Image 1 (cartoon, helix red, strand yellow):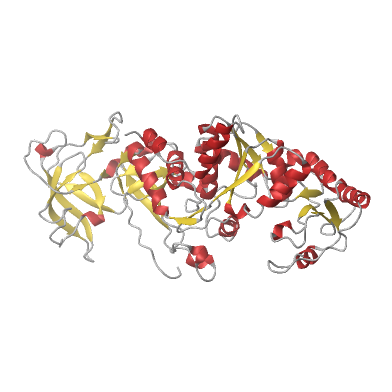
Image 2 (cartoon, rainbow, N blue to C red; image 1 turned 60 degrees about the horizontal axis):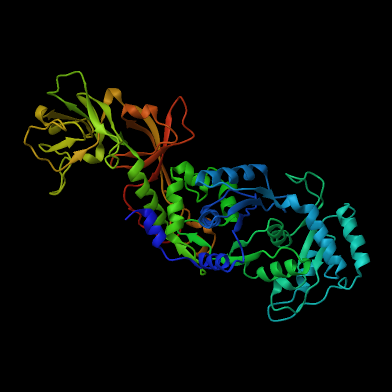
Length: 558
């Protein structure tokens, strides 16, 4: 059964059920969704779920998705983040119909605020943020009305205009909705709609010194764009009441908000604030460090957009938050890379072997690029009498079921010959420096007439043909499943072994032509990709994931 058929047979999630009913009833002819990131950091896997959901729904039901940047806080937002977000969405395989910014609507939002003031539903408050917080009350006790709450519309219009003209310093005045200070929903107790910020904005420059709060910009922007299904995560459930109140009282297009559960990923953190800490405190080498759960970090590590889309599809959406095992993400990338990765031989910890009866200067042996791909073709690999194998592939005194190389034992060299170890050469300190072996000429792969059967196959490289490369072995950034849920500082649980570097690995010469867009399986080692730090002076490869899940959680602090 094809993957497409399998996906069609999966039961509908609750949002698909809502949309299908809306279309069936004629409420909408087509749907419009939006992805509304704030450009104050790089996107992470939580955003990937939202991207796949919003773009996936509009694609499935024949609508479209807008990309809208929630740029209402100029002090934390940068063009760098805008560009990275656009690049991440496109890399994941999606394209938006319209690109918008909340700042596109600042003039319209200002007029909406005027409408509320004229209706007696908003007022200018001279209280400080601390005083406003004190007046809010508690979940069990009602709040207190501001002393400025009953100003008439004319006074409020004048003060709001003066706020806009820059007459007042930051923090001295706000515009608040006039709702109910005894409301059971704390967010409905006269929420702030506008605050003063004398800050340069990356889109509007210095035109504005007052900026709308998220709750005032969000629903109204949805309405302006006629978004039919505004999909948020569960933390916005309490905000929905204000979302609906503003749309109703402004008498504008009735967009509706729906919420789904955020999916956290084990052995990492999914908070922009915490990720920023990791970057600014140099625990990682930037937002795109391959250990980060950012889309750019995963891309640099070698993850494919197909694997991330498959992961998002497998975890689905729900109404209850939970912790998703990162092992599922690793399964998805292994499954995809097994199909597409080019096989190559690379030795990390070399032990030299000399084949004493090999008299040819060298020859070429053929090896498949990917046994999973019938059209993957083959490559030529140089073979000579001096080779490198892995140190761990030889034992002088092996246990009974050790099927690799040992004195007097035979193994096959991948795509080449069967060899036998005859002599172990050591230095004065007793360290093994070289193995003397013989090969069976009739045992060449694809044309073996030797009749000899061996249980072990080793990867290898020819010493004089090998190219060197730096190999970065990445592992999980934290050594506990839920670092945010542990006692103390989450950074206390950083895995000290999350990066190990092999400064000079020896690779078969075909890797000299490695490309950034290609993925590689280093035989018996894992899946790798070329890193951006590569240059003419040397290649750098990142390990995407091991061949098998060998992770063993460590308890306690790192």
